[in-house]
Length: 395
Ligand SMILES: Cc1cc2nc3c(=O)[nH]c(=O)nc-3n(C[C@H](O)[C@H](O)[C@H](O)COP(=O)(O)OP(=O)(O)OC[C@H]3O[C@@H](n4cnc5c(N)ncnc54)[C@H](O)[C@@H]3O)c2cc1C
Image (cartoon, rainbow, N blue to C red; front, side, top):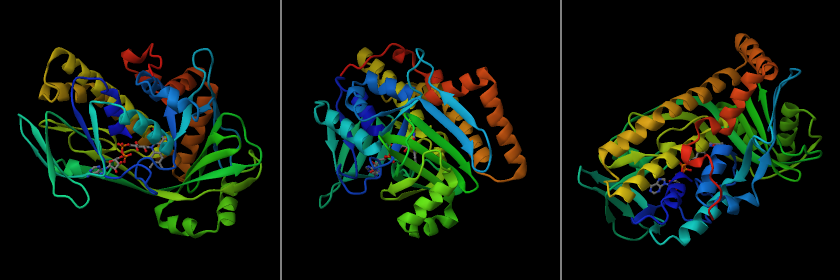
């Protein structure tokens, strides 16, 4: 998602880009562009708009205008609403697979981007003059590209990060997200739900007329048991957790699973190489912040690279890469801490945390400035790049 977005952001630059991807589009189980519903913040919508991609996404993106946050077994909760005219929606839900189609369609017509796929990166030699990237295509000998800059965007388990000698540390939340689509009896227009249950958070994101993407968090040790349930029994479990505010849960689609971890590398750059996307930071999906944060990083890097191309400066210089990391680190730290605190607060049945959690939800509901601050975090507009303030789709 992030590497392809960066290539689109560097469209029309007088520079040649090789985009190496291990898994071809249209594969049954792609690691990135799968059937997950991704919650895009307004900042991400603005970025896709600036890249000329929003018009392709808009037809299927579902606006979220209301968010209801509740806890199983407790009354009340918090409600967030999009306040027009400031903004018409709090965010949008897109299916990762559809986002992939829009990105791939754009990549196919970009003359300066060479999509090499399937191709797996398996060797990197970097020096202060150039970086050499070795990759293998099925049935072929290893080939090598020599470049001025390597942007590493191969996800949480980033092999290329290790090839660069960058270590990482992990925090295992001992939770698994199970994702599926559910059809409900009485949908509520443009409304997303986050419900906290003793097993972990359950999110329902609006997909189309009466379907929602369900993101169900369970203890990792119980994941196999939930996966083994018949559809009827799994729907029953969801209904129990969620209650009847959307009527009966009628049908569900295929289930897929994601182990949940926080992963942070020991560094984000090496000589002529920089980490981007989940290889630079992987978060718990509870606040739906991961991809949105990655896109804001991507946009900052793209702006700096375009500036270097324009002025004839070296795009892989240490000064450029250090400037990029320094500019993004404060927001990365804030968002990572926010997602981790949400996990601490909401994925736990400890009585003290329950009290803190209820007080937090009540305060959020009753104190308008707090609510406003929370909304600006959810929308991502607090951290928007100045170049995006007045962006319109340039498709
Ligand atoms: C359950 C769940 C729900 C989420 N929901 C949201 C949400 O609602 N909102 C949000 O903002 N974020 C969400 N996220 C986070 C989001 O999915 C990630 O931030 C995003 O996928 C990161 O994209 P990426 O391109 O960095 O990595 P990936 O999407 O993992 O892509 C990495 C790519 O690199 C390729 N690759 C791997 N190794 C190699 C190699 N050696 N050579 C060549 N190619 C290689 C892979 O094939 C893949 O295509 C969610 C995450 C999870 C787990």
